[in-house]
Length: 284
Image (cartoon, rainbow, N blue to C red; front, side):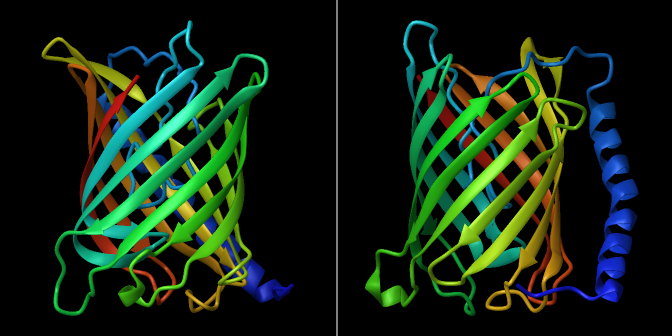
């Protein structure tokens, strides 16, 4: 394991301390958009390991019927770019459908499985289109004040002409039911990159009534850290920060969630870019 020098550790701490006021200001602005409203009732959600920078609303667990522990959700993201952990993997229109199935037991927790894919719909001359299909198996258990999740990810690239190697990750995360809903996640690649990626997420959800519809407004921020990640980042440590604002809009039996985001790359192999997307989901 690489050990950091005291100078590098102090530099990392200083960087994080500089970020905290910006994060607080960003979240405060999002809350101001929803002032004089009531908070949306808390819902049990699955923590989806694929809900990275380029996904909005992806993997939220369909609310299971009290009489039926099985639930299914179909969703798709339409994105201006495919942003993954601070890197722009595809510059151009990306379509990313997903199917997620979950089994909920009130005493034992939630077991879920999903299949997610990326379709390159448009790109510039410097970016080659590629296809990706990822599979996830996960387990989540909710305590009084936190939700714990563990699982496994399979990254696959089915087209041989893409010349991309698949890989696998195990992951775990904990999300606290408190102010700003802090979520700490860890992803361990044990096949292709032998690396670790850590993520700290903060968010706040408020509801507003607009045109007789209850909209859920959610500002959020994600901080990504790499460790033993020299195969895809220049340095270890804090590599990227993504700020975002999403609004979940119910429409008949569907939920439409547009979002706008800004990824601020800190590592030299990450990007600084505004990007947007919309998630369309249907669950039963």
